[in-house]
Image (tube, rainbow, N blue to C red):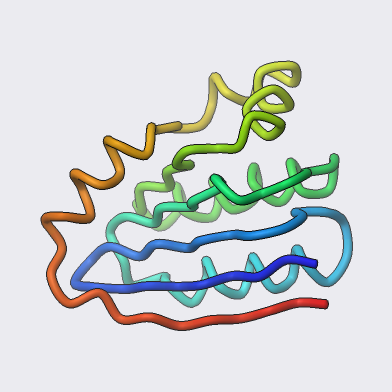
Amino acid sequence: MLAIELEKADDVAVVRCTGRIVRGGELRTLRHAVVSAHDSRVIVLDLSDVETIDGGGLAALVSLRRWAQTRHVQFKLVNPSRFVREVLSRTRLDSIFDISSLHDALLVLAAVPNLMHYEARCA
């Protein structure tokens, strides 16, 4: 199961993921959340509570990064869990993503007033 919370303010969107980013409905839910933030200048994907990610999840992240690039949107991965960080490293995808620590992300978010909150869950 993947739970997603979307917070938007001004030109920054934060997509918080909890659970598993794996092939199936979870990926559609994730894509919908990110694409719904199309009017943002920066999309931050918080992966701190992601337990596992499979090949389909990695492909989805690459696809979302490409989608963001074509729209001149910054796409950042923030605070990936230990497992996700290891998978990104083993697959060398850590070299193509902008990966930030939680501290760096909090500095960005502190500058954004009035975050609006949305939630989505996929069973």
